[in-house]
Image (cartoon, rainbow, N blue to C red; front, side):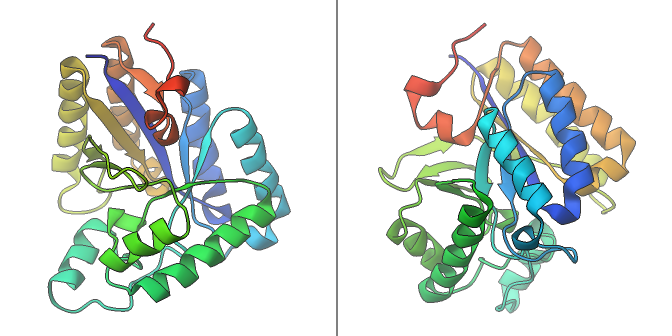
Length: 249
């Protein structure tokens, strides 16, 4: 079975413009189309709605073949952080699980706000990824009601229209945390193993990873190894449409 590689650049926003461009430079060198997880709301003291230059950059990237994915709203702390959800949010969403425990109505408001900002920026999307891949049952209902095509979890990709699930764990780093070394080993070894087995490999790139050169180098080495093993680079949206999947080299 042909291995497929999806590389997603997370937290794409004016507040992370420099880091996003660095990651995309590396992906361009490898002819890898990226799934850009764009934070539509205000984040890190900047906002897409007021940054025409960054909006133009996103339009250029989409026109060149990258995919735009709505990534939460403000990438902020969730409203309900009691009990296990608080622990999960800190561990998986880096304190930004804004969709982890909200109602369908609250999720719908944030989804509409995000879509409006992206539309005003001149880019389109039918995919959604919650910060930390954490979304409530209400969020799933709101996504379906608003016509989103897919969402992603830690374990894979969910087609919201058909219910089909594409299994493929998301590999990412934990920069600066106690689990940094372990996460780096899991990313490198896990991605290579899935590539050899012919499965779906998902590698998530975050802006803060670039502050740790060993993590950056390990990630790029893992990507190169996946490509060398025959993995075909694609985007989330293309996974759900075989007609757009590139042929194996």
